[in-house]
Amino acid sequence: MIDKARALQILETGLATSAADQTELVLMGEDFSLTRFAESTIHQNMYRSDSTLFVRAVRGKKIGVSSTGDLSPDAVRQAVAAAGAIADLMPEDPDFESLPQPISSETPSDAVCFVPATAASLPEQRAEAVKLIVGICAKQKLQTAGAFRVTTETVAVLNSLGVRQYNASTKAELSLTAVGEQQNSGWAIGYSRDISKIDAAGLAETAADKAIRSRDPIALESGAYTVILEPAAVGQLLLFLAFMGFGGKTLQQQRSFMAGKIGEKITGDNIAIIEDPFDPQLAGVPFDYEGVPRRKVVLIESGIARGVVTNSYYARLLDSESTGHALPPNNTYGPYPKHMAIAPGDKTLEEMIASTARGVYITHFWYVNFLNPMKTQVTGTTRDGTFLIENGKVTRAVRNMRLNQSILDAFANAEMISARRELYPQYSVVMLVPAMKINNFTLESTEG
Image (cartoon, rainbow, N blue to C red; front, side):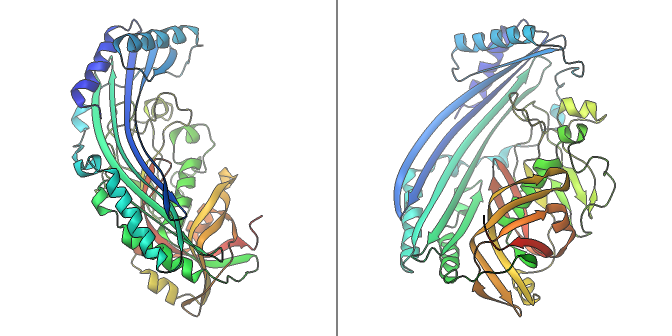
């Protein structure tokens, strides 16, 4: 891990060599450890330490971006020079005005992001967790597969206008699938900044229970069902909702389902979605890749579209202020929320099941993809634990089904929301999500 003094020294050295009108340097470091297992045996155990330096050089309204993985003084100097040379070759961007000014007074503490025990964890700890998982599943004659990832990340941002930011963070993620001889399977996932909070035994028992109950599945007809989605399934829908409309770029370009709908009802009254990097459970990095302090942003409140996240560029185009959600300089997606939370309800999973005369219980989805972004319509399949609910009880396993569903329509039909929420990570985004009971959810009988 690159410490604060070293990171800022590298960036200051590079900045001193720049001849551009404005210059920004972003240093991203990652120490990544991974233990993967399949057929109840560890088959990969690796560690990687890597750093990438991005340079953004501004000459008038021309912008050039370069990057390097070599942090030696010569390489940093060359990257700075390359960004300037690229800027000279670029067409002017009439909408660009400036890199961000420093707003250091709004930067909160970064202490909650970094857990020393996670950063110092050893491969033996991951192997012990896998041994525990394999032992629990073996008692039920189940094979296991999965991955245990531990990451320490550092990010430092510096620009010629005075921005100086540094943060270190940790995260641990364990996902596993228990598989039986009849192609039955169950899945579970755990995530935390603190590796000691990953409950390997609990995850194994959850996955094994679902695998056992997934034997001899029945087929259901295509149709509109009442479904109960576990938090991971809700998180997968929320993530795609964010892809399709919670960023300032898609809103400004009228590609977002939020375009023209700010202030209007777009989901049920019981839906509130907040980008909240300061929630203690989400514990987000307190600034973005422009060094701008992140803000809490209400995306949907009582079903009403309230706003999107922005970086400095799209904030200006939208006549607002940056919410601190810039991605790294080489991205093309624009600003994006990375710490979303859905407000809890007041029900338990057991109450949701007991209230359902006939429905489908879904653990998570697989290969979710877009069908119509403006209508928030997606497709994918259920996986690793899909069950029939009859007369208030989970009765039988169901063959995997394909969803063909508008996410906003689903959130408009959310009858119940659980009080308990869980952390769900995917694609470098962490979400705090409840379970939901949703009516009129479209499922098709085949996966094809």
